[in-house]
Image (cartoon, rainbow, N blue to C red; front, side):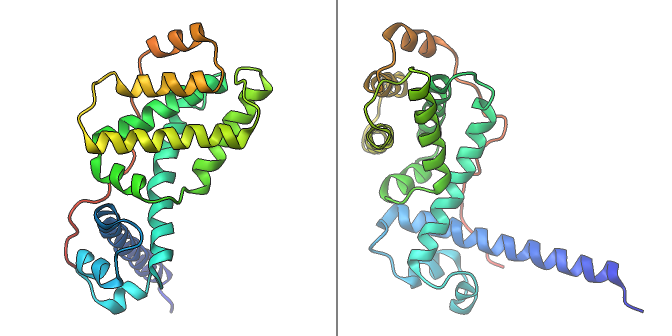
Length: 221
């Protein structure tokens, strides 16, 4: 007689182990990409950082490009989901954009390895692009953002955040810096000055679903 309970248990345990191994590779990848950038590493760098065999690595990823995309998606999607938990009930796109940017910069300040990775890798996950573009579209529709083009607005938001993260990595910035950055972006999006002042006087929500911090030392298995 087939013991389906035992089979299901073995399947679940195997899947959990596979997930842990994949995350371990992503942990190592973020550290390597953050240190060397997206173009310099070779496969052996990731194998050594993850402390695993070449065969195990290739069971999960076939190329550096595939690993780069997967690492970026894992990190950014996880943060976006955490941010959305806090901003999804905010009634206006300006509020969502304001506190989304502030939470993003807060993560960058608290997690320099994450910040270095995202700053050095040009690829952004589709979830990031979708969320920012939708808020811009909604804001234009409600006349809260006064910009001539969504793509230009997207580049303003993402480009400014990237440069701000670069500065945060290179030098010590004042505690008011994230709000100064967001103030500047909102001005560029055409938000009313009084509205900006009121929004930035509000407390930044704490994330109830903390974004995963990867980049910790990987344990051998």
